[in-house]
Image (cartoon, rainbow, N blue to C red; front, side, top):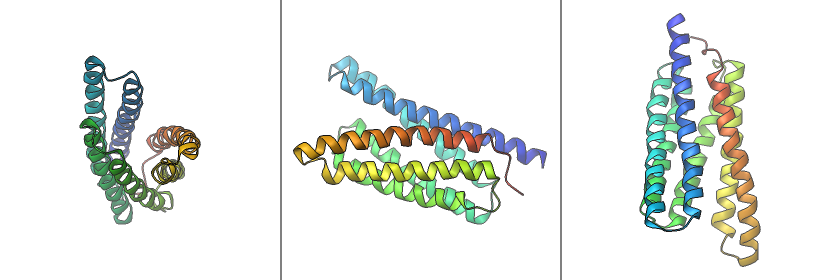
Length: 196
């Protein structure tokens, strides 16, 4: 029992660190991209984006550890979240090579939907403690906000005046989603281990 508690604490803490790495890295890359296309800035963006990918790889690995600590239904949900994280790595790699934004948008949309399904299962779990379920509920809402944001940008961003409004709304939803991902995983991290 004590071993399970220690493993849960260590694994969820490592997941939280990975989330901070890829979340803060994504923001830093976005800010650096706004500074222009100078070769020095471009190199910095690449370095930060490689850090984001490393954060996602750590996230995937630690989710694999988390899968060993939960029941079969929850294990399948965490597997879905891992699959979605792999898709997110694909979009980060596309970003490194400045490939089409709409392709990345479609892949991100699919990743958010898959995560939404996984977090929906986890938030309803009967073996997860209440605090963990609350964290997974926040993650579910964050994915829902991200789906709306990506959907607005993909579908309506090409319309001149509407595109600006949709970009603003999508940006606000993205910021709220970003905060909820961090607070959601913080709640999971600070939760007791699930019932064995």
